[in-house]
Length: 188
Image 1 (cartoon, rainbow, N blue to C red):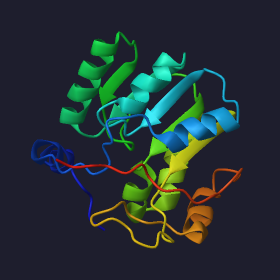
Image 2: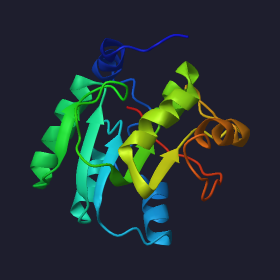
Image 3: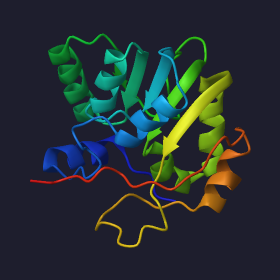
Image 4: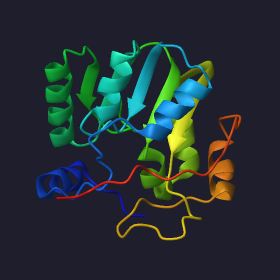
């Protein structure tokens, strides 16, 4: 199994090779929050990138803690939060080597970390996230859709429903699994 290093993620930001970075809050995340009426609470964003979702969530009243493996992404996220006048706990870290974050979180949002690191062991990832999730909490993950008829070149790693259930059900009760498409990104 190949592990992508923080330096490799930083290089992607240097090159602008970040097809996941829409520069806007994710529409599927917004829809799910509204549909499930998720009230502002203390929450954790895994792999926050340049902070578009972090800033949106904090602006909606969530007490956001967010991290990314890329130091360059975190610099951009911090600058975005500062420019928006948003207070969030932002730091650079690896999902498998986090500092003490205190009590588990009632809500965890993940736009793409799971589908990237699952190749290194989906069950290991589920265990790491479960330790961060409060009893009765919600873990929302958005992952690449294997049924997408024309996946974009260099699109996200795709994960089947079977694999998600097998890997994540060791630690989580599945509330809902449905297909969606990531917001379209225009790369300049």
